[in-house]
Amino acid sequence: MKLSLSIGLRQTLAPQLIQSLKMLQMPTLKLEQTLRNELVANPMLEEIEMLEQETTDQEMLADKASEVQVEDDGPEIDPRIDKIDWDAYLNDDHDFKMERSFHERKEDILEQTSEAHVSLYEHLLDQLHLLKLDEQQRMIGEYIIGNLNPRGFLVVSVADMAEELKLEPPIIEEVLTAMHKLEPIGVCAHDLRECLALQLEEKKLTDTLAYRVVQEHLYDFEKKSVMQIAKMMGVGVEKIQEAMDVIKTLSPNPTRGKFDSGAMPVVPDLIVERVGDEFEVFHNDRNIPRMRINPNYRLLLKRGGKTKEDTKQYVREKLEQARWLLNSINQRRDTMVRVMRAIVGEQREFFDKGQAFLRPLIMEDIARIVEMNVATISRVSNGKYVQTPHGVFELKYFFNSGIVRDDGVEVSKRSVKAHLAEIIDAEDVAKPLSDQEIFRRLNDEGYKLARRTVTKYREELKIRPARFRKRVGN
View 1 (cartoon, rainbow, N blue to C red):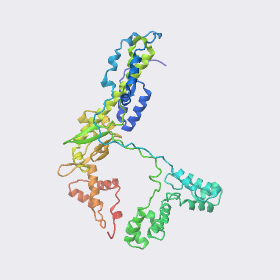
View 2 (view 1 turned 90 degrees about the vertical axis):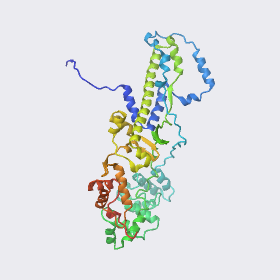
View 3 (view 1 turned 120 degrees about the horizontal axis):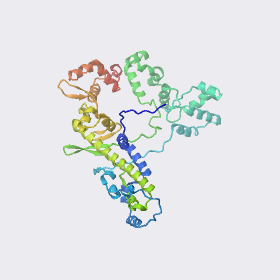
View 4 (view 1 turned 135 degrees about the horizontal axis):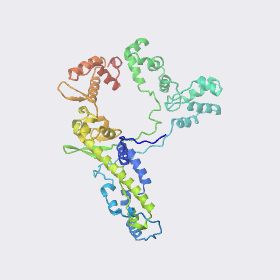
């Protein structure tokens, strides 16, 4: 073993920069939670709204506290700490107060409250106990509920359950049949076919063509057209279409939306509003706590040598942390507003006329305009939302590639896909357009796309091929 010296270059991020980057990545809800935690952890920080509600009596008590004399019985104080101009340090409002925009929204934002969450299993157990079952049957029912997946489907067969419980299969099937009546209808089924059949049975539609389609040809629709299914069943195409219309009213996932945990609300980080002929960008900091340095600590620091050295050192450390935090928040706000203003400038037609006029835009373009790194633009765009006159959009929505039409106009990929969807919506359902026909129409309109690109866009829009879109008699 030996010691040696070497020279090299290494990039090291300062703690302040790391904190700024973390703040920039946070969406509004995450930022609010982080700041609330900081308010608890750092005694130097406090919420301004709380101070504004303080009474005059409390202010008088604070004034009296400043007159209290403290005995100097502590250890010797480091003279370097006493030389700090604490008054100047604490009166730097720009660094020590989190600035906020003065834009006030006219309408109040409603509090998002979540309802008490009841799981699928609790819901089914409550119903199970209302059925007329003996102790053994109730035990079997609880076992069945314990073997349901989140969609409400059974993940084990009757034979496996009978073997595990050491019972005869007919006993299991009897309880399972009774549980098929539980709400939501369709739970406790083994697969999609049985789930849909149970829903049709509940509606007393067992003697219909729809019930026969579900039982015999449900999975054939993945590879065969309506006409092929009609030929296989020996009925007219119109009848199959009517049966499919009935099947579409059923739920392939009966538990969806009923037992899911509440969705997190989308709180826009930015707001774009039209003011006269221009669009103004505002930072939505309505729910972000407005913070500043606790002025009561000025009393502690003004006592000079009467305050212990370790106390002053602790306060100074917390003071620096508060300074970095508040500066990071201010920098985050300014950066996001600058980026959004650049986006508005580049996508002016979108804000004036709507989504069909979205232009091609890449992050490098915005980075060049605001003179920032592309990585910074990516951090600003990731997980952030903006409220516009046309709805709420993720910032990433405004960045997309595009093509150039024959007339030289740049068109975004999203605009092309929207136009493709419009063409399909306007087609004759008796003679739906093939991808080749859509390709020709788009090219005639100046959209120079490859044939495979048309198919790719259609699939991304989750639109089925022409043979599956065909309907007869409409």
